[in-house]
Length: 275
Image (cartoon, rainbow, N blue to C red; front, side, top):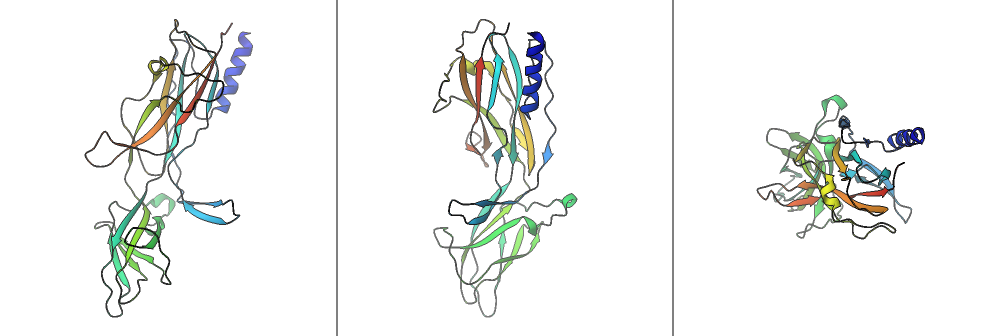
């Protein structure tokens, strides 16, 4: 039976990717996997209509649901939820009135453009789009095409050409910036519950999350530690679940305000006695 249990643990380690299991109160904490740089600014998707479109990449959780089939009272486990921070930003502007033959304007971006010398990416590679807008910030289509021409990293000034002559235009710039993201990892009761699983109120005391804010560089894949420690005297159902989510701290002085950047990470925990 011991050999079978060890085999099951090895299989789960191989399948869980960014997760790791430890057993017993004296087990060593598994060090978190190293960060990865994943520089990807757009992806192509196929809509239900069959149309192929290109969209900007955005923050995502990379791990699927984690099922743990060998936990019981008195067991411990160290895991990592894996997420990818993509620093996308959209700024809105009202351009200067065009006079004469002028078709060029500029936008001062609220955050600096991202640039990665090791990958050969220029500043302008990280301008995803420049779009005409109406006064309500909705995209509009006109015959003119806006093009990013140059960028000054000291002033954050982006030069844009293609504005219609003798006009004044609302426009936006969608881009990838160079500022790190600050994230909190949080616990939450699942809603709705998965079929066949129960919620255990005491489980909130069993789940150990990072108490500090996690700072993540642009385009970085980061693993955040989560531990599950079930007391020996705990009374638990055969199956219970809880959610672990990732939230980005809002900018400015409102430190308590958070913006959810992705779906919650759902952990489905199956408990059974191990003989």
